[in-house]
Image 1: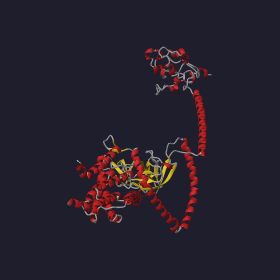
Image 2 (image 1 turned 45 degrees about the vertical axis):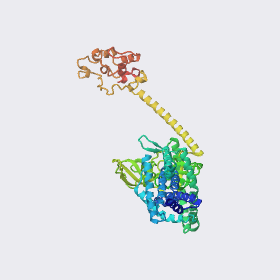
Image 3 (image 1 turned 135 degrees about the vertical axis):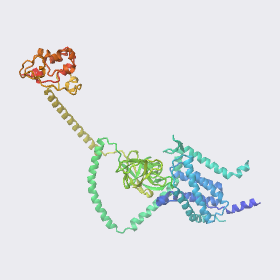
Image 4 (image 1 turned 120 degrees about the vertical axis):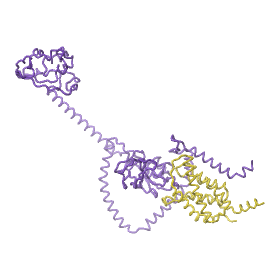
Length: 173
Length: 451
């Protein structure tokens, strides 16, 4: 009976969105991620696909959906780069899974939690990219700490703005 | 069993997705001989298909955004922000007039240069055809500094085409799609361009680092390299034509991995972070117009005629030198074959100097040391052969060395023997001494010219 109660509460807290949101928001994130660096130049310290992955994983609270969402976004990013397809896919798959797993246990409405979660998951994603590239694939990939750090900070700040906007798109019963 | 899958289905799905991606990665990366991983220069068909789909999905919105921003900019610049346009127009018109005059003179030089390069079969690469394209998007990743342009294979763009701007080089085309292309910028870690420092003439490889800066690597420490030195393309990478501006030296740092090497940080001439319009070099092969081809043919004919004239002049000069050589004594013996001419004899380059033979020898003469006195001869009269052969230096076989056997003055008898192919004396060799005997010829050795 307690378990059933928990599932019922979890079902009630799962957010639902129109189908178009599931299609257009990730696409918009990918397009903006590809286009904004041309405008912002070297100050483009953000990873919008990761932010969107974390948002939907937290909102849906389903590790499977978070995993698949992260995998799709990561593979899409890899396809737009000139690196091997799958490096970002692995990183964002894990990030989506972790976000959804954590989202079951925490209050995702809290701003501080959102901020911290985005920061930590950004660091984890960047670390996984480096790990897969350098140690699993043996590629000569250099990386800089401050870029990783700035990207994590940028993702957290963007999440503060974007998450409330996306919250408005959910379906209220 | 079923409950395990249900209970841990999240983990199983995660592992399955990760495993599939890792297998996909393993298929794309191959090991080098050093044990490091390496990506193929070209994608496989499957990977390329994924990239094509991704690009097809992202490219239309990017084009829409790009065209919208261009339209807004166009609207602002051409219809709203028109202050001082008349004055600028007048200034530009003056500039155009001045540039036209300069262009007219430069055009002549360029045509002449092309003609000469064609004649010399000049292999240098020059830009002959470019395609203008707009940068519409990037990879969005710090680790992959590539961007996309709105022209592809339908516009004649191919892999490894160089991409430049008016300021300098930008990168090279890495992947080509029908209506778009992926360009690898020079500040990417996997890029490479052969460059040369303009002043110190130091060559190196330009590539990017993790921070998106361009640096020249694999350079031995050289304190002549200073900040501000211009960097140009070296032309050896088969992608960028030689002499294109790359940037200027920003600073020189020591290579952290190798002591005797340095890294030269370069500030790119092109604004890599904010590219808008670029030029793709689609052809570096010389293409001459019909008129230029005719000019080249004419020049070749003229060059052929000039070469023939030079050859004729050389033959005439040679003929004159032959005549002179024949008239000069001792250089050419008409009785010997060309390969045995004394002019070509290098067996004894340091000839022994002999004093001239006295016409009226006395006791102080070189041959007066106990020997018989030379018969008295008159100027222009040949010495009797019998008497000269009776000289003890030439008749004693034990002293008959080639040098000693060489007479100071050839005798008519020896000349006849050499002509007959016989030795003039048993002590001398069959042909060599005879040849040597004819070397120091004097007018006396040519009786036919004596009066």
